[in-house]
Length: 355
Length: 89
Image 1 (cartoon, rainbow over the protein chains, first blue to last red):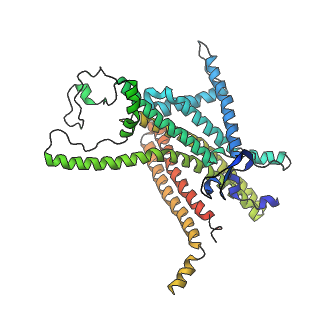
Image 2: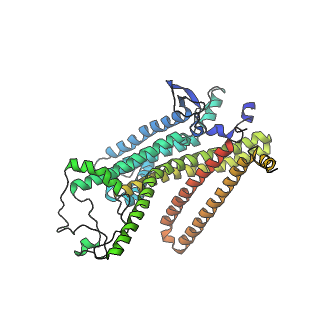
Image 3: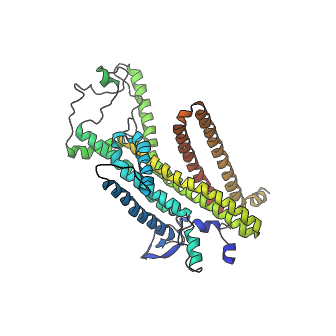
């Protein structure tokens, strides 16, 4: 009781070290990075309770999801309606594919569904495992010996940072691959607008290439040339030319429009380039902050009982914690959905930038 | 004399606590106004066209989660500032 009386709400959410993983020190060159729990210089690599919970969530994913997949494989030629756990997971999987990914990604949905499904279920299991008071249960059952076996893995900036890095790689690598495919097939730069439908060139268009003689015949590049040009072209696609002057304007207007165009292009390019890095950063912060905020508020309200030391406050704070935990469950599901949805959105924007 | 005034105001880093507290309050104000406006408009949209209720509700939830994302980011900054209150002395 005395230990719990000095309960700091932050202790509930910070990672706790179990044992050293690697026996040497890491010198980052900076003394303290408070948000990563690095103080006084060289950092050691510990195994924390957040790592343990993320391992538990990963093992749970690895056990549950292949079972669902095998239920599909075992179905045979007569697909029946699923029952039980299979039904639960099918509802979620089909919802993610048909309502979240297909409107965004279109015909490329099947290529990205493994990534999106994995992201959703890993984040969901981490969030929900954080809602289970595993550390208190183990603490009491073991006779007050084993502390901190449990916690919210996604409440760790390093884990959400890792997930955001996965999203970052997925977005940009898929964008570069889409440009590469377009270059190889020769369909890169083919705009599907009205000029192809009517057969006439659009007089207001800002393009400067001649219209294709036959829109169904494309000349592709060699794989080597495509590999060289894929990354620069993908980066070039970040910003379009907004004010590029057409062929039928006077000289002064052309100069003015070119200056304006280069200026706008520069600003747009800088913003888009920063945005490409900031969007996964926002993904990381959003997930981390939502998980941390809920647990800090829960721990603060619970610690109110021990500060006041009265039974009435205890009952009231316990009821408040129950209601807050229900909200936390909603936030756990919602944040997993939001992460998946935004990753799908960014991948869609990267592979088909003209839409 | 201005020296004394400045020392009285700034010496104990109490302004840091003021900044953190006011910051958290203002952030909450902005977020509540934004999400309240969003919720009001989306409820009105559902009332006008009940058959579009599913899509409107989904968009409302997504927008609310996005707004809350950077709200919590600002709240974490305020919390970090407040956490340094005991250390700076």
